[in-house]
Image 1: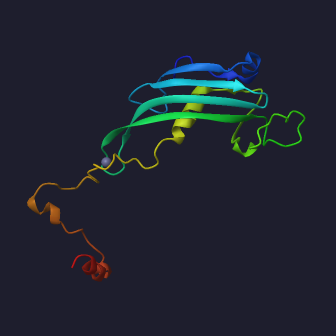
Image 2: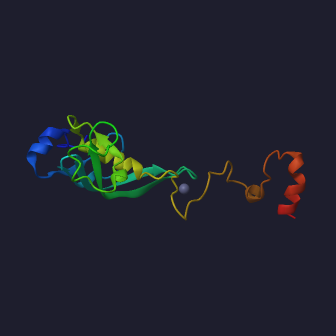
Length: 175
Ligand SMILES: [Zn+2]
């Protein structure tokens, strides 16, 4: 929960006639981070679209998929998104479509014009999109933990129980 980031009704945003700005400093429950999220976000009602801009950064701790070690990664976003205000897909031919942008396909997200905009939710979604699918601690990753590191023969351990049908192939790769 980031202090001060409460959802605002779109009608209220419309009445403002200027962008609503929030400064961001705090942690999200859903994305535990080492440092607080810091930055700013703004939302401007432009008739049938809502333009949201955000610039946020934080550092999150991941668990490496390979070595299971923890590592930190800087996560930042500096983006703007146009959210369609309407029910369903934008349809041409509406009376008030004169100021619609040409690239209507770019409007991926839509909100009920009588609903509200939740800046914290928006930040969560944007940061989630930037989370790495594969968590890799980097070039120095020691790789998967070895079952037994002790003993002089550990480096030359035979892989256990290879299917005998692969034996011929195995000779090819390790003559
Ligand atoms: Zn690793």
